[in-house]
Length: 180
Image: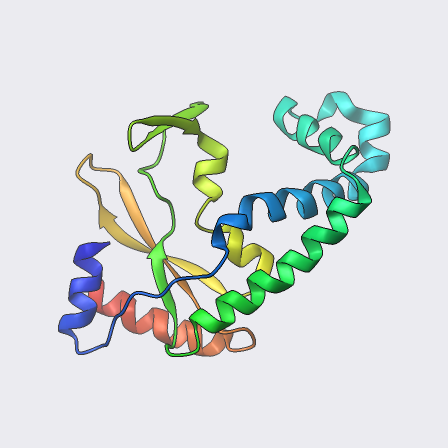
């Protein structure tokens, strides 16, 4: 990440840090929206063919049945606040650049991963930097960005303004040329 940002600055672009207000709400809001919506969508198939779902997917779909409508509606409202927060973070820039994952790719089948000395669930960790934009609808893409010290591939996530996907693609093409 640091090397890519350094190259972008060397190419003459302005890069500065921004904060996204309330970003820490993301996993809670995400789960309270995605689980019941997925559960509803899969209800008929789950009722007749639950054994055909992988255990992890089946568990999440079944969990969605037990979330309260009040929590779902509250999460929808909070999604609006998160969407506005991302829009505010983008007010003074063309795009946000951040890692796609906060970790190197974990081994296949791993259920936990070390994050700063703490064991964390792989799935939640891998979604932690992309979930927000899945919720808010801001266009985002990932670009390969070399390898980390352990030799595993890394990538940058680039997030743009809602309704300006074409501009995001132009920015991504320019960044891709700079970092490769």
